[in-house]
Length: 114
Image (cartoon, rainbow, N blue to C red; front, side, top):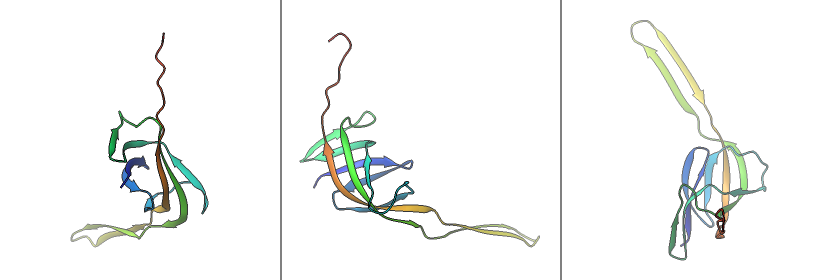
């Protein structure tokens, strides 16, 4: 099965065609197509390509399924014997993606003088 390791929102994700994935919020509406070119590694038809730091010509195509918020994270600060307590919550905005395809188009690198 073909897969790729891509980077978005400061995190790395291993994706396959047909996967759904929750990532940090990406600007766009439901149904919009997104192209990720920050691909760190690909395995297509058993051939592994590792980038330095990214694989040239590798693209992951995805579709935005939903824009939502993640589950609430609770943060609590407490000081003993002083009755001091601060409780806060946070809900991260996330984007639900559907991975449409992974492709690798080799590009020729031009060297100076050749």
